[in-house]
Image (cartoon, rainbow, N blue to C red; front, side, top):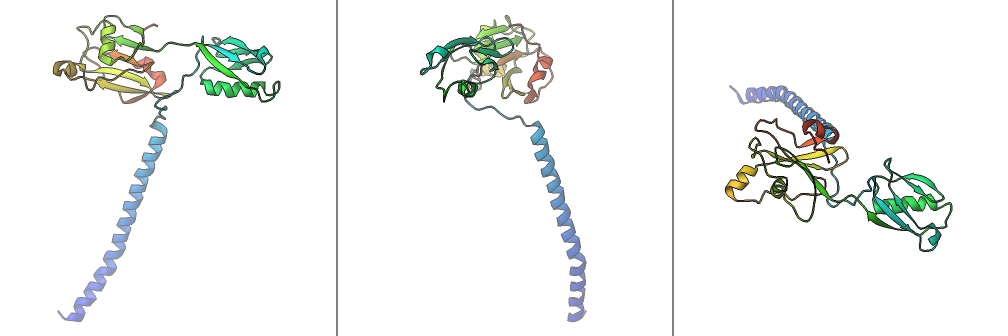
Length: 240
């Protein structure tokens, strides 16, 4: 085969291979883009928005707040958050405040009184509020709601609730923690392994509102995040 014939064959092969290679690369890019878009879309709909690490306390029904007006003390008042989440403000009327933090309530009150007082100065004291608590349910001696007094771990909470029963699954204890208004995080702990090894490094510390659930020996696996309204479907909540 002559040198010119070799060049001719090489050029023909290059002309045939190059478009197919570019087409394959384009298809690969399209496939990657498809999966990336699907991943972003899935994450946008399924990934919960987490709360701040140290969230401020949000007002609840039954909380009592003391409002102080340093410049106009005649507006001082002590109010209780009603069962519907409203408070009855003097000279203003009812205002929904449930779920607000103290800084948010301060701004809400300033807006409410701005037509009556010029640049109102307001300080708020939270007089009575819901005490920190945790819940232990399932296969324990005394399921229920307990005050969270000081630093408490999951294992300690189980002991406070009377310990686990013979029907409990020690290797699959669940900790439910609300991370937003719509999502609850689930964490599975192998208490059996921790107690057998004597290593409590994985024994998590409770936060206010946490719930510890001890299932029976047979129990389905839960995903890491589940919608908060569905927690009661998975786990029968003890009566407070």
